[in-house]
Amino acid sequence: MLSSINTTTCSRKQDTIRHKLITIQVPFCNALARVWKNTWFVIASERQSLEMAISHQLFLSHIFILSCLLAFCYFFEPALCFKPRHFNLSTRAIHWSPAGATWYGSPNGAGSSGGACGYGESVSKPPFSSMIAATGPSLYQSGKECGACYQVKCTAHPSCSGKPVQVVTTDSCPGGPCLSESAHFDLSGTALGAMAKPGQQNKLRDAGVLPIQYTRVACNYPGKTIAFRVDLGSNPNYIAVVVEFEDGDGDLARVDLKEAPSITNKQWRAMQRSWGAVWKLDAGTQLHPPFSIRLTSEYSGQTLVARNVIPNGWRPGATYRSLVNYL
Image (cartoon, rainbow, N blue to C red; front, side, top):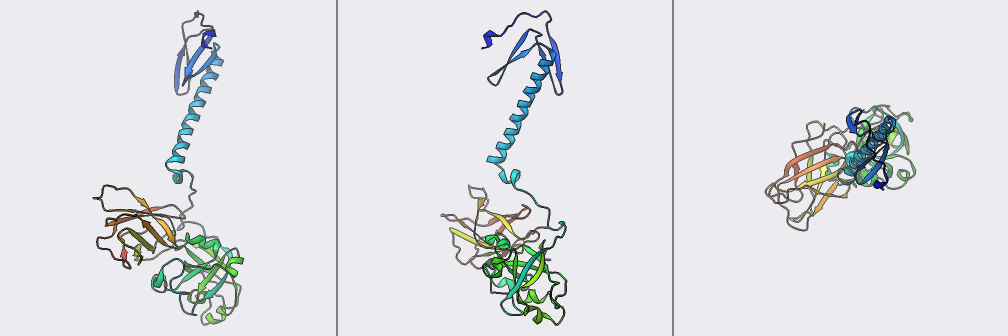
């Protein structure tokens, strides 16, 4: 109880205790009672005891500040505080890892038409140009890695050139060696043939499961900006888009949509990954274009905004090009 503390009048009126950033003047009594945030402390009159008490109080203040920061991170910006950030892919040191490779589709084709990422006929056209891969579960990540770019090379077969070629993830390979190996690329016939020495493409395609090496790299589509192809099932209350040709990371962790600035609700609305590279927003009420779309990349967490990219009078099946890209 505070009443039990001896508050005998002191012979010395006061002394000044200095501790780093603060100066405290206290009665130099037999004992000193202090109340801070409804907690009382009994502090002995000796200078050393006073300094220890002040240090303890500063420690509690630091704990309080740290707790506030952690609370902010947890409730408001968890991604900012806790999500690990990787190095930029364009500056990351190249590290080669082992994998297996097969091929599918026609010998000089683009694998399958479209694939599990939803890019459709784009896979056979520039800038993909049939240089695509269906990746196993460890690399496909349930569609999160759609759009990710890799360099692959082979040296274990006489027909291998040893030169790396770049491919982009556009499809999933869910079974066979894709499932049994820690990392596997089921390449288009075009991509696998590109690893061969001149004139030996068919010999390399006949090799069966081919040991290769791979490394993640930054995507680079010169002269291209990010495009949004509106899904055919979209309507005034529901919109889904395929996001294509992202430089840099290539993959996306989050997509948000904002309606026309004249609408009362000017907040960004989170879209959900429908499948692969297809993102959807089921608003339940009529949406008001033009739409701005904000992208957050998966690998490095970089954010980019394509303002008013989907215009008034948008149509299902149409592709709308932005004015922006990463890098």
